[in-house]
Length: 487
Image (cartoon, rainbow, N blue to C red):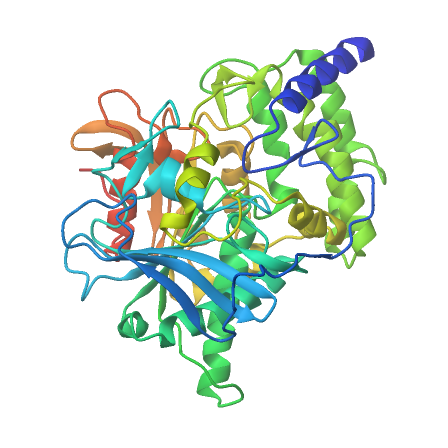
């Protein structure tokens, strides 16, 4: 039995090492693993041909890249939050009624992965083609009825560059808030400060979303109390896709999903049994380690929990399948890579450094603090109870942040809507009369599980629905300040 489990883990690790791509880094063959060397702050030299402007934006307007709808404004460039910290952004005005449309932020996860993934692979005005050489028009772009702002963060991620110090979700929130203050005071965008604000994110965004939203609300309170000065962020919506929020309630989902999901078992019963032992072993098991982390554990305790749990539970249970889409083997080439395309055109939209999908130094900074294993559930509960409309969504073919874990997290919530929500049964979620998934909703909180979708839900299609059509439906309903409903 032990040999079988070790053989499976070795095979999976080798496959993952051969294709080290995706929002969640692979370290030493372990998905979400912790490097063996102690990370240190890496100071990236400022570019000799660039003069930063701390507290201001540097903007390229209407590059003509990606959004080709006539008359739709776009802008990209940098917000210099310090002389040695430059955050890259790409803004697309709404295709319809931009003067009144809400502003939606988009963040990919990692930690350390670029939001250009969301733009070009998922929900932006264009999509990368399967040969990775060009883009096509996206009729289900999220900027159809919303102004959308894609942000590469923390500093060092994607096209952003500078001193890479951020190692926690809260530190990331502080930098993003500073960037938004700079963005919203710029004359090109200052009108957006009065618009409703939405925050959408995925993957490690299960940490980012609640932490950022709670921090924005606390900063608003401080502005009202006149303890700080700044622009109030009119936060109305939080959306989280396939997110890691609360490890203690989500890690059992790996055991459940590997054994029984809508498609097929991922590994043998013996591999599941070994992983279950790794979960339940007193003191040294994954469950005990996550509990110790969240009971005041040090950075070292939390980092060790990440290392153990991802080595002994998350990685072995995926079997020979793609962690982001279990309907494909571990080397699934979809969604197509965007690296060569972005770097071939980056000067046209103001990109000043070579683009990489993931910054491993930023990832290691987070791994060193153990931020991965620290729960963001209290922040999520605060945001829900504050009146912000919240949508959680998940693709049922995603293993890495599977619906068993996400729904376990939701069941553990303690909010003013939780009793009503948990008493409900799932209802069919249809889009234009076609079955897209199943959902629940209570008050201003909703959850939807999308059939046939992998980790990046808007990148997939199911049945007769087009790529991104189901995601566009739940995004539009939520942005209209409505609970989910079938159409």
